[in-house]
Amino acid sequence: MSLKRKISFKHFLHHTLLIVHCTLLVATCFSCSEEEVPFIEPEEVKELPTVNVDSIFISLDKDLIEKKAANIDKVFSNLRKKVGFNGTVLYAEQGRIIYNEAWGFRNVRKRTDSLQANDIFQLSSVSKMFTAEAVMMLKNEGKIDYDVDIREYIPEWPYEGITTRLLLNHRSGLSRYESLADAKWPDRKQPFLNEDMIEYYVIHKPNPYFKPNGGFNYSNVNYALLASIVERTSGMSFADYMRTNIFEPLGMNDSYIYEMRPDTTVSLYIENIVQGYYTEKRRPMQAPNEYLNGVKGDKMMISNTKDMFKFWTAVDYGLLLPDSIQDEAFKPGSPKSRKRKDNYGFGWRISDKYPGCYYHYGWWKAYRSFFIRDDVNDKTIIVLTNTSKGPNSDHFWKIINDKTITIPQASVNITYWETQKGSKFPYSSYRERAIVE
Image 1 (cartoon, rainbow, N blue to C red):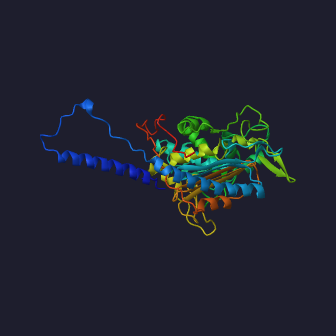
Image 2: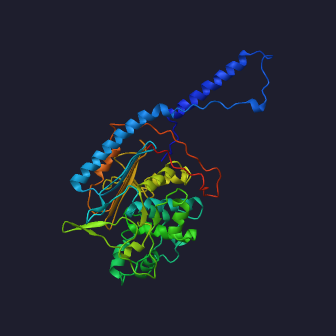
Image 3: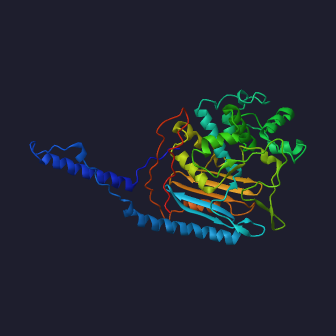
């Protein structure tokens, strides 16, 4: 993916005014004879006047944004009426958050406690893009090699020939850990953790679906193993690594990795987040916490739409990784196939139908999540829901592909990192992109 460094019309006008001012100044100097040029003491030098051109555009931009937001609001109003959409939505275009609203209830069963736009959800498989980012950051630090056997990092792993790259691209051929745990884990009141998962593959050695790099098979085990590789190569827990290197630096204050402790009983519910609801006999039922929620990397990131957009902003502007590393996330990891239209990079699906579009969906225990990015037209939509049923992704792609109203590029200033701390970045200078209220 090519990161954008475009200059908006506002920037162009700023630059033009400065050039005109300087030209007039030079012309004035040449019009004076050598004897007429006065000596100016340093303290007499005055700053050039600053021309604020933002006000010229603010009315036009605001009208377009309000119209675009109204159109999106109509879509979700209809989805609420027709299919009971329950969740939060963020739509951004050209560096601007155009729409960030909530529909429905936290308590779906009682239809009480209205959702708020900043409510936090379990992201299910959309968590994978964050796991992949952590792996790429460790690659950038020289701690991970994509193409060596993962037994370099997990020596006890019983299968040979599997590399970090194959895990990232879902080409390991490994069977599902969920099936293994359901068959062998003795007490579902006790959490099943990443280290337990590794131990069970060592003990039981379930047959792989195919040899490493023998095909594509989307499987949660790949990204659960990646989280374990992050832990072993960084010397930190996965949750601590994500917090220290991604969440805190980017101001993602509402994001964290849910963790269970090995010496505890599985709690009835995950506290302090929006609860998920599944449908049973046409009635919404609150989904309980469960033992497989102890496995992280493939799921179990907690966040909201605003924090997720902060993450994308950092990715888009190269604030986490150099382009040479980041771009691999958006490169197809498998050969083209008639059976499979879209491809998979590092934590992102790559659209075949819409070139330059990347996305990921998620479903896990009554949480559904959608992240769609049109990199060509600089559009992003993020949808988080707490119900097992609801609108499918087609509705969200229609919003992305709607060109009836085009938003101009925002005039934004990003403060890039002034210094480098090894392969990391100083955290103090990060600012959010401009948001038009």
